[in-house]
Image 1 (spheres, rainbow, N blue to C red):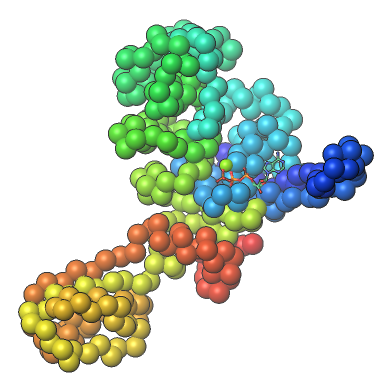
Image 2: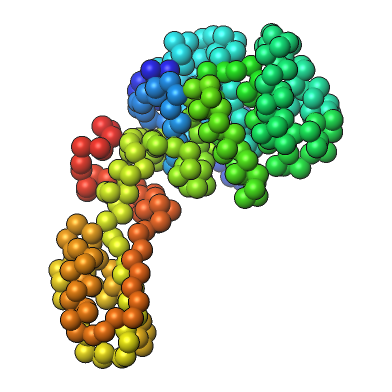
Length: 341
Ligand SMILES: Nc1ncnc2c1ncn2[C@@H]1O[C@H](COP(=O)(O)OP(=O)(O)OP(=O)(O)O)[C@@H](O)[C@H]1O
Ligand SMILES: [Mg+2]
């Protein structure tokens, strides 16, 4: 296992601030701290070559986890290793074997042309000249860097800067790459370029990726596996299909009737009419209880059908359900794929 998190926990102590005129003074001497548990007893393993999506709503504890895995934060309890290294104990050693992209900020040198940042990083990581040249040529081609490689970073657009950040994170051929919202604010074309880049690096070099994102297209296009956390706790660890199976059982059948068929009825357990608008009728049914063909046959026996569509729920609506219901949704629906929390 190239990434291993065991009972990883991070608490932040923050001052409980008082309001009012005296409060500013009182705050100076206050010992009234409150503890915020950002990550609570999270365990997971990632095998070499995997691309794992680490997802959860705002404030779930994703960035805090990434910061522990990259050595920026020290865990309050529990432990983690990346390729055998304890990140916070050997930050430099870990730095040499990982790449990091934080979508919200850059590791490039603001006032220097992009290419100068790359040269500096080459020197810092001691990347061999031939390896550097090869990687730079490859990344320039995939990410289309040549248009702006001589431009100072502060003059780059967000999408250009992000592409620069990706190349910078990958020049030293890290075994593991952590991406915290790598596609935030990018247009669809730039997102596609970044995704292609991740898949290619993963395929050609077997690089392991752990990424957080709020864009579920990233997840669908990149990840076979997701780890879902909320309020610092792990709720799910498994395949995307697994989560679809458990929370995406509802299907929507829309039929277009040839005439009004005012008396048409649906009376199968596990199905109900959602809307009826002239010849158009929308029925929701539970895939596990009702077979679509039975439903359609029953309808067709009552009325001639002109058109039929069946829609699966989008991953987005499934994930929204889990976020809104939190741990309760998962507890109410125990199955073997459930994370042991
Ligand atoms: N340095 C800090 N001091 C105090 N509390 C913090 C600190 N960093 C994070 N937190 C708190 O820990 C919780 C988890 O934050 P974190 O940044 O890990 O969330 P996230 O899952 O990355 O969310 P987002 O999707 O919004 O980026 C939040 O409640 C946040 O307020
Ligand atoms: Mg975050």
